[in-house]
Image (cartoon, helix red, strand yellow):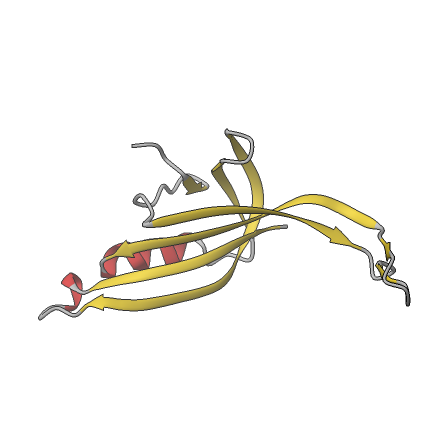
Length: 120
């Protein structure tokens, strides 16, 4: 199975879902006139945002959380918009963990861990 994303030397398990978004950043001078005509001052194009969800047990959740805890980190990921692998500096945005299977032991409980990774 193809590795979709890794952080430095850490490769997590294959994700349950994976999406890549590229956005442009506009200056504060961008907007619309009173007649609705757009005026735009793009200051950066193609900023990556990656949405990932993993179905994980407790130890896998902990390993991923530790790998993405620094303020910034190197991420290598598959970009489906260019069909190539990219490496860039990213940070972890919003993170959520939802229990999907409660088990008699904490180690066997399953979680859906969802994280947004945003390019610096």
